[in-house]
Length: 325
Image (cartoon, rainbow, N blue to C red; front, side, top):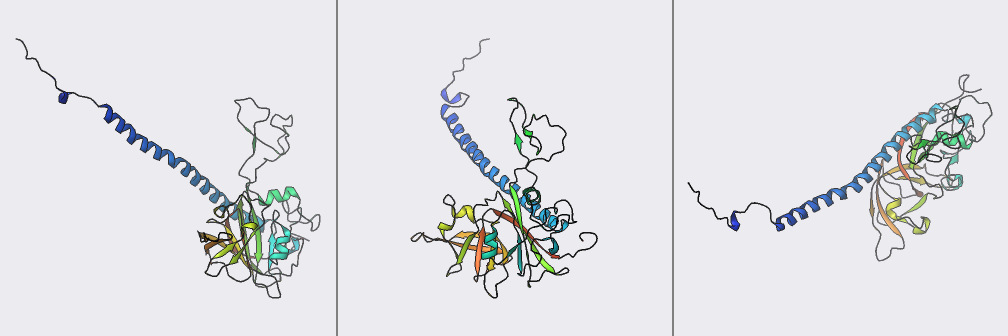
């Protein structure tokens, strides 16, 4: 039996036309571009989260270190009786700023403070090694590829080894760290006395890649609840968004005179650009801070690179046979 012949028309064909392929490629391309655009944003948010996490941890460690190493004991300072209600431990900051501008007294622990609570060399200035050990984070190891094969993994650096393949192999050194994260500490109170048993407020301010060549930036109170920044006081390559961002730290209420206000720290929660485009000679910003907004009296300063802090009430320590003689 002969089967009938079936004639196929254009409407009966199976397959995808070229136009349909191009449309599908276009839709897929838009989706892929959107996904790729999220990668840099995700990386930035990851870096930000990592920085906030590490600085928060460093702040708590710094507060614990400050107390455990005897820094809450005025007899261990280079200036045991400051005579002010605000003292500062800031090895990387400008001492002149704290002394002349904020009416604060800089304190320096003893050189043996990093290793023991018992004074063996009297009250002297901290050395560089002690400073690095105390106020820098040690969770960012420094690596080197010097004298290594092309496919070899980077080798962590040690303080006693001049290069990775050094013949020194006794392993008695310390890891070398980039020290990207650091902190400063301040103690404040309602009185200018610093006697054992008195309670003071300890504040640890943490920094990410602090540039010590940039001094704190003064903020001037505006007329409508804003703050004014003189662009001449900031680095030429820095923008307003680079300097003032959520997490930044502000010190306000500092003033010289017969009755200076007690300086207080504020953490920036929100910041808005209020600069008048018609007269951009001065930057204007709006700030929302915790625990309160900065006061409008005295002098207010912004600390570039500050990303976090912790604050607690501590009791000044005295001396005993257990910690000093």
